[in-house]
Amino acid sequence: MSKMYENKKNYTIKGEINKNYSICLSGQTKTPPFCDGSHKKNSESNGPYIHKCKKNEDLFICGCGGSTNKPWCDGSHQKCPEHDDYMKRW
Ligand code: FES
Image (cartoon, rainbow, N blue to C red):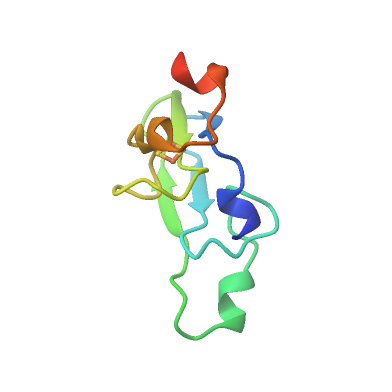
């Protein structure tokens, strides 16, 4: 499994207005949850998802790999057998 999805919970980022975030979609980054260009080593991998914040907002990015709405967390991590008590509160 990639480092991106070893987190077993979401990455919570304080998004700043008018700032672009390059979020890994390939799962190959070594700097999760952000793209580090690792997807370029595999021609079949997806490039990053670029998100521009229209306001200051919290970004909840999937770190478990189970979301059906990547890069965003959809709560699927709560179904992961490994998730801990912290995640039950999310
Ligand atoms: S961290 Fe993957 S669905 Fe929430």
